[in-house]
Length: 307
Image (cartoon, rainbow, N blue to C red):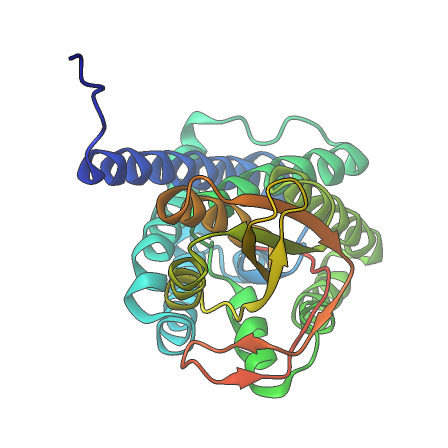
């Protein structure tokens, strides 16, 4: 009898880890290239740590990448404290080091900008930055930055992320308008908008909440995996297949865009035969679990991305 070869769990884990770090590496290097080709030469500061560093570099001449790294250190510590500890730290620290140090390392090998047209810099800087951020998110990491402050504030206050991003990034853009001129500030807003759109499409379409319906015979195992690994609250109810007349369990949860691939991976591992439908929702409120496992009223809304 011929036996079918199966891949061991360790082999699958190694392959998944390699894929994640390939995405993290590609995204981090593209972020660095984006700063050197579009953001810094055009002095467009689309919020976040990169925009703050461009402002500091303008007044002090300090290396841009090193300045970004220094600013990110306390933010990474904050994220370690509130957003997942070592699970958060491993990939985020890798991205921060490669991205920030890559800005200074790659600069001698790249042209000092590719165009003097501010419109082109804003558009292509937003597209390239959004693609890079999407790759980093698909790899399970983040580029740190002021997004960490917004996420922690959202956990503590319940204020929608979109408003917090506007507060943190808007402050940087306002200062850049005072320093570089209001035309640069307006182009920063254009870049930030395009950046968010490009990130959304890399992560699977427009910026909306994902709703997940799962029909499975292993409801306890699936819900436990979603709860323990992603801190997702899951609702279950009984269902019946009208063709087979068999009893099945239906699970429902909402997830953010970066977690969609993680949900798929969990289902492939726990119950490959589960029937899954992933849809779009415009907003979800309540029922979200914090990292400590307690439910907290929380609103998920489309957010802009800035590094």
